[in-house]
Image (cartoon, rainbow, N blue to C red; front, side):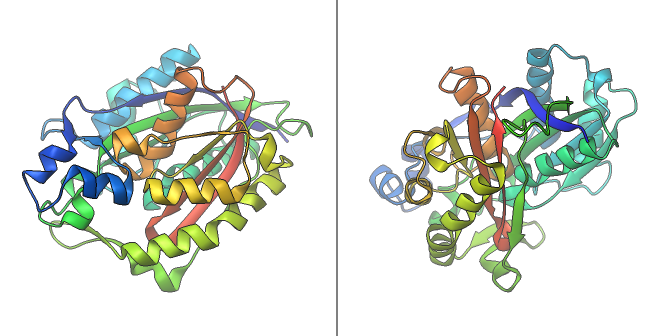
Length: 318
């Protein structure tokens, strides 16, 4: 059986930056209040002429250029998003059309904040099964479109962006020493699914912040350690930990409890806010671009959130 590996990454964020002081002029909040509670300083916000598929296509084009591949080389496009308003054409189909792809399989995956790690697992499985050879996996969300800008507890969290990964077949992917993409561990807590919601017409984001915080900081660390165990990588051997960028007060204690004492911890939340499915690929792309992790080094990717779902795997960095 052929394995798979990530060979290139790309990311994109809108040019407009919304600071905490900007938000303080809109709702009853302050830079100190936001920073102390969630660790965010700025977030990027797309305009009405910057749809989700455009952001996704920008990130994808960057990843393809880095990989040295043409759009026609891709035979599977997966877009993880929860902010696709239209049901058809799908975001994946629109991205494929924007990039001028030939005839790829196209699918959207909506698992909200853990969407990218679910989509990455699906691409790995498709390649292992022989159903695809080269996949484009994208996380893209425009959270500004679903934000309640009158609710200071949620609007301060959200940002827009996209991140993309090129995943290719790897004949050495089953080598015991270093699988390019390790086995996924995924699941959910269905009875608590309403703790994170995007509902209504127009749709609006809402959450039970304390419930999510308690679940993430207490239940997720042992699951993340099991992800490492399934990959055959000890937490102390991880070079990077890229968690869903939900809240710095969640990221730091979860990373500490995992035991990744030698790893770089992604903290893109500070500059980008919570970008839902885009957060993991964006944060990883930036770490690789800045040279903070070496090629081939093991990185834990772990998404969690909406539906109280989670999915994680250890990958070797491109």
